[in-house]
Amino acid sequence: AGQPRGNAPVLVLATPDDALVPLADVRRTASRYAAPVLTFPGMGHDLMLDHGWRAPLDAMTSWIGQLPPR
Image (cartoon, rainbow, N blue to C red; front, side, top):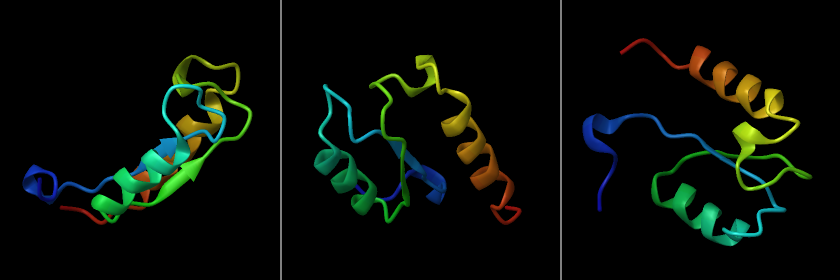
């Protein structure tokens, strides 16, 4: 597999406390796409459903806001 179709930017959000997907696997995926990894300790696998959902959302929207126009 190559870069995402259309060379889309990629950001990876994860938690080191994920019981389903080890952080090493997440980092490998991010590395494959030369993507930054942002981690959120103390959260579960479904970041968007966790009590601290706002932190990943804010990080993601901030990252999107800094992308150059395409």
